[in-house]
Image (cartoon, rainbow, N blue to C red; front, side, top):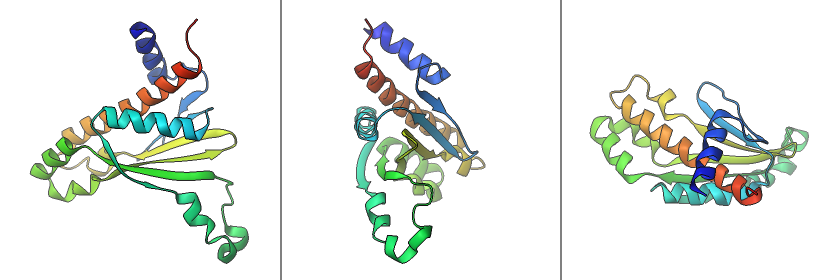
Length: 168
């Protein structure tokens, strides 16, 4: 069982798992997978919390934007995004360490992941702390923080994939 999880995680990190890919803008980590958003969201939520990154707020972005549909008319949701939502989370240890080095980077608490569906694909996006803080004295800590968040997202996806497609 443990070996299967390690293989799934490695495959995910290398982009070898079916239905999972990563595409990036310079300041954004972006995962896509052919999985429903609700299951993906719950799995990543649990993975973050299991890694001491506690979700402190959840925003239903889609519902908030839908209220503007009459006002925005044909300009509303032209990309046909479905159910955008976000979870805000913090890792207390990193918050303390970063605040000891570069208090301005306290803006990383909370961090957030945003989820949306488009063309039967679930997307997960995360603003990269290393992109914003690359010239900071806390750059090394930000690398660790980004790696921890990325690993938690990928572990959540791997757990979901394993649950939905168990090894025979």
